[in-house]
Image 1 (cartoon, rainbow, N blue to C red):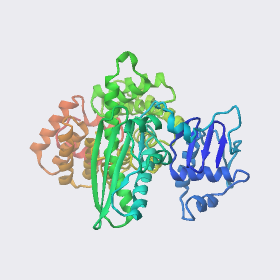
Image 2: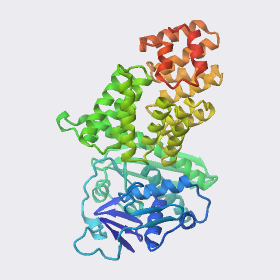
Image 3: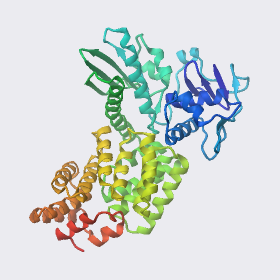
Image 4: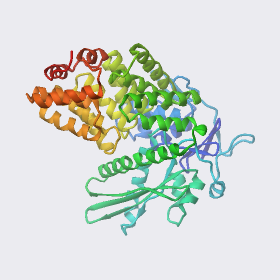
Length: 520
């Protein structure tokens, strides 16, 4: 069955949502939610109706339901404020209120792409990175293991779909290549993607091995390849673990490939997306120059594309970093710009993990409103538990709030989902700062040194290291760390650090800085 509304088509047989000829990436539960609402559009459906239909009667939190509902609205160009197609009726439930036509598309309106068209037409590339995950080959020699290979592909597609900067082709489109030879460039041409992920699954002797390779479909070049082997215990837990491993491995490789493409682009031909990529790469540099360039590039991207939530959030983060790291020459300006830009980003995309976690960090640091900040961050990691930046900022918010054990758990989860993250020094510095406040000074010294091995000019790590060493009575080493801090941050003073904000619950940090002899 096909349901047509506005310029969308929901194909329940192929489990695809189309907008004109383009497949809209849709997670399985989000697709089921849309399907259920459209099929029952004649009446209001309750939360219990949705729980029974989508989650098969399992207990579902309001947050989980809200997240799926927001994702469904986003997929069809709707929002909670507009409610053009999906309407919420307070204390009653939800109803799909758009005009729907079943069967063939009425004449004079856009049509979803047909099977014949898919097999012959080359689709244009979208204006952001795009990927198809092809069916993984089952090389176990056991046809009954086919479900495991298919389950892995679906889990990887769902996980990748949560990254808002990435277009992911629905499984039913990519599955058309199952069981037959194909050319990667032809796959890219037919599905309209820049990148293709292919792989295989082998289960034998109580173990499972997954291999994967990421390929540039335009050139045929291999970008990444790896294999993952685990003991075969709980199948579903194993799928979750392997999904995290695969996604955390390919996501940085994808982003690096995009960085290199943007770097080769002539300055006169830079698009908003190119500027955004350059801004994102500069944001990894925790230096005065790096932050300034991030703000400048992100603002240029926002000028070209005023509806880019990523440009708004990168610019907001740069203004906040100026305050946090003491680089600001006009604190009031940077504070007000950070708040203005994060409000803009939220208005553009309120279900984006990076936007939500940045909102939490800004509210915590600039307003001291930890309850609201934690709510933002909890929503962020629910939206995309594989987004390492969301875990980084969530850890920071819990640390600002004085919940140090929770902060450490968040930082460690972020490292787990992205062990090669360019923000790794900040993860370690965050763990060390939380350990300091828990009086676990020896452990703090170890992780601060890990941070500095990765980034020898990380001011937060030098600050924490000087404090931890001073608390341990290792005065000579503390003075060396303090001197290094003043080299990377010559204007640093303890009073200035306090005035920047975010130090309400950092009493032991401040005490240690005084013991280390840093200027008041």
